[in-house]
Length: 308
Image 1 (tube, rainbow, N blue to C red):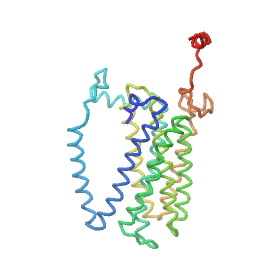
Image 2: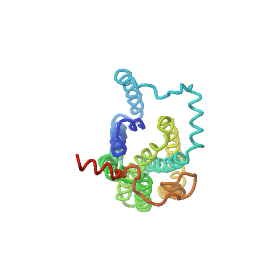
Image 3: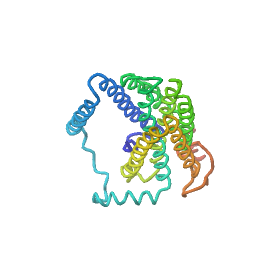
Image 4: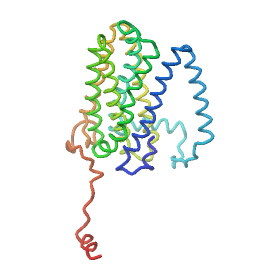
């Protein structure tokens, strides 16, 4: 996804990235609805066989239609050297560590919610079947549609830090409402799904946009480091949410998500948008992107343009 660095200008990069992210969200949306529907009518084991077939179908399609891009490894690094260089990137770039920690906390609440939601809706007072539970994924349509517009008019104009903090606060409102009202009204989980999808969409796009400022020649390795942190967050959210729900119910798992959001906000506040070191807010509090400010041409050039 970071190859958008060479396909889109800086002023439209987040908008282009948000279109790709919306496509990914569309895939997750369809998967949730389809899995809930199929599990209700032909059994939950069928989902794994369908996923097996789709994965191999994707493999064939990539083999037939994926363009042959030129190598982005001009130094000729061996594979194990590239893997080791990813560890070096973590020790070299504070921004990468910050974005990875934020992504970890963000995706932990995402998977925790969708894992425990199934338990909540299947139990009293709701007693919903898997078909109705799968329909909850349709709430994500709002975030999917909003993504490109938010990327174009907010993330492309302001520093990613602004959108990350805004997204965290939106998620926090949604999780608080859903956690402490979800046991007695279905409106709570619906509001939580809506707000967390909106917030996480902005966080994900802003995180990836922030990674563009790191070395262009290492964009794929930077993306790999970020994705590892995101998948670790998903695993922790799934496992932790299920365990907490088993011991303390919906409120316990939701309260853990509030804690993850608190840590995510702490990681945002520990390092400002213009800070070059590991901690602090040196460089100011401005949320305007300085790399997009038009440069004023010298007076001689302006006078020459007037004469022409």
